[in-house]
Length: 545
Image (cartoon, rainbow, N blue to C red):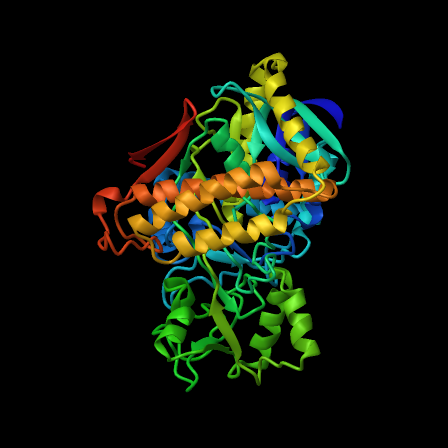
């Protein structure tokens, strides 16, 4: 297997919004930057096909008390995300600057010449999201990164970090189209590879990539960070979403309608007719509402836009395109579905893995030279853009103050990764990545799903560990692309194990972490639940934000 050695100041693992923003900022500060993306940066990440909402605090609009704005976010879009309040202060002290930068770069952040606040808000209360035209955002951010001298390597997947557990000295990557291992000597690494969205079955289990994230975000950064000694938090706290049934898409706040039962009665208390300023906030308040209606025999539920005005319909179609719902619109056109005449069935999407890499307001982890941004550490597109920028700025400053690291002590780790890939590649028979991924999803769904207890979690952990050992010794790949898929599954097996360990340790019910053997929410546990690797063992602790 061919080896290639490269050197840089800042290595960005992941070319989504956060990774590109980090690359832009670090490169313009003079750092030598390389972005590695296992797909293509034009179409990668949560914002790959667009977005139309950006959390933005503007003092002239919201008033000088930022905490009032943050409180409103915690009531609405933030929901169960548990991070320190100082993180929000850092984000919203910078977010409007990023909005204006994007406008300058050619991403339209205004609507008809004004900041347009709409969606994700309760009627009559403060509005926290501006509407923007994000359909071409990835192409524009790629251009800005290249213009500043950043190098972008598509079809290259970061697979392991180099370092001694206290300081980073680089990373290992594999090419997903060539039999090649690439070793990076890097002063800093920024992890921006996204959520872990393929850990649980999709709404259509036979089609694993039918997921709002596209099914390509597999927790690679989190798995690498944990193995390197970085801290993760609240990994056991799952998340859910709601949207069109069988056609999983983001954009619930883009829909201008009312969520109704089969008899035309609104299922929530917030709106009775379509209102383009707010949407229907029942979908923010209770992501499980569609599933609950189905279980109770009162469903299904429908997004009803039939009372919409012509102007509001055109407004919604405009934003649907920028949210990245072109394929959904094309499908409705092909099937003759007119939202002004036909309500659309909505569903609660299955569990997806939550949790974050622990970082501070500088996007630093507990390992020197290792940073994290985007869904890895903060969530949502506003945070991805803002902390991508912040991580790039701080990584560049750190790189300027440190010497080029040595990787001479990393030969064993490099050889181990190479040996693992060669073994998978050379096997002639055995299970492929899809079989292993489906088995993993089954275990996660059955034993760490919507209801958990000690017996289920212990049994599931036993199954997962057995599956993990089998995957290590039996997985096969017929080409470099499948090598990447196999490594994704191995990363998800690592993350799945952490979910079980942390779910066992959280002896309470909180949010979507439901434990009938501990049915009450413990106010004392409203804090960071942190796991890290120490002397090859998982160590779990509670920590105040």
